[in-house]
Image 1 (spheres, protein in one colour):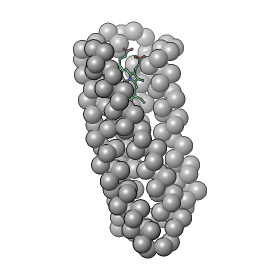
Image 2 (cartoon, rainbow, N blue to C red):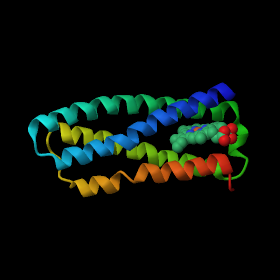
Image 3 (cartoon, helix red, strand yellow):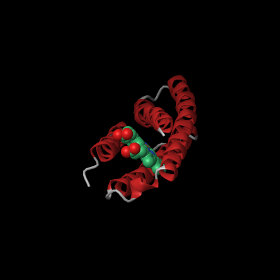
Image 4 (cartoon, protein in one colour):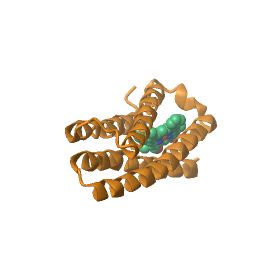
Length: 139
Ligand code: HEM
């Protein structure tokens, strides 16, 4: 299962590249009233969203395949359950980013760049806790 795990981690990294950079594009778009710049940022948001969908969906499918192949992880303490709850939160964050890409596309953004800067902090928090859960397995 080492191959499956290797590709699981590769796609998790791809997913997080998008979850880290999409909100930065929202910050730039919220700060920039210049129409040609906004148009370029909208294209970048849409393309990065596609890569983030691919990374996220593949990471989750490979993670679930690992779990089916090695079901004992669910019985070895509560760390896997906690991880699954956090992954559900990450999927929620991903869907929220997708919704925001649509809002920018229709020029309907109402949030400030400061709001997006705070929004941008969430994936780092998820990443730190999930990696500690899967590597340290504290409970
Ligand atoms: C539904 C989603 C997911 C499922 C079902 C899942 C499941 C798994 C399983 C069963 C393992 C093997 C655990 C072991 O051998 O100790 C694993 C490894 C790992 N997962 Fe996930 N995972 C998911 C999403 C994620 C996410 C979102 C992240 C990062 C934020 C992540 C990070 C990792 C890492 C770093 C490892 C390697 C741990 C190690 O070998 O020490 N996974 N995952």
